[in-house]
Length: 114
Image 1 (cartoon, one colour):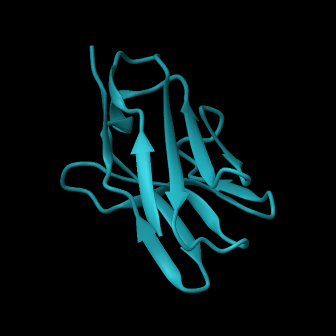
Image 2 (cartoon, helix red, strand yellow; image 1 turned 90 degrees about the horizontal axis):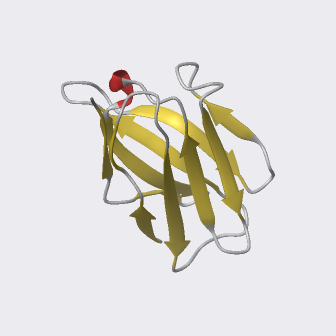
Image 3 (spheres, helix red, strand yellow; image 1 turned 60 degrees about the horizontal axis):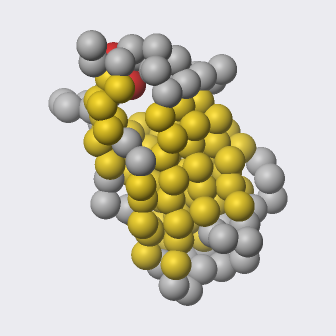
């Protein structure tokens, strides 16, 4: 499975960004997709994910600000990020997971700074 992510960039605190990621190749009809992030010097952490069943999960630090959604027909997952904070600055990695394991996207940098 290959992942192509888009979005990211520089935004001021309080601003918004939208990340998108599309999976291609040998995808399974039952899977989960979403985003992790890794800030400099920190461990990679889960941001939010969504399963083909419709269930979603997200980190406490982004609840109420970030929304994950997906289009199963297009194997696409989106992350709408609102009210961004400087501590959201990180490289964001898209992931795809099914019974065979996990695939990762190349990472996209999100910088929140004035």
